[in-house]
Image 1 (cartoon, rainbow, N blue to C red):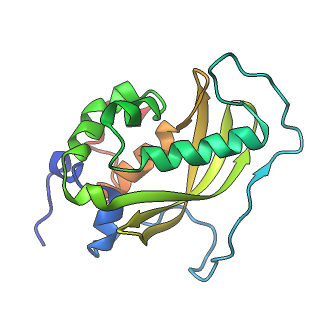
Image 2 (image 1 turned 180 degrees about the vertical axis):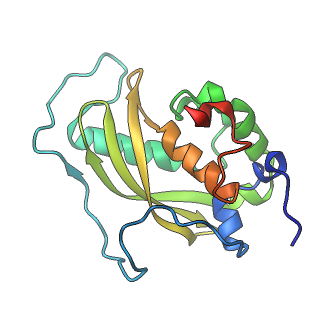
Length: 183
């Protein structure tokens, strides 16, 4: 199979690469097996504060924050979501605007979505997320670890999480990734 240059490979989301059978590097999972399919429940840390968000802002803690994170991750990874909204749901999204715009024009990318199975708030500005990338509704990258960040009153997909997917697309290499992923 011909390997695409990195710029072209950005047009194909990691989930589609997995579905096509291209070998992916290990994603740092410590689970050790694929039989771990027990559904996780949403949790918040026992020390999470009950804070009152600014007008128009999403909750920074509690069940409202967990719900916002799930909704925003699902929206971000839905190819039908307008590019401008996807950029607004990615931490420092303007730094990866070219990548997001390129992916939005790929017909194959339109089959990708995500499902969040677990959120753990780790403070009022960060949360761990476990998510699965789906292609045409079938799991392609299961139980991926991710980070959500609370930025400007919105829970966003963490830059580190998106860059990890770009690294998978790039055969596990960081060379050639956008500058925002080298921080």
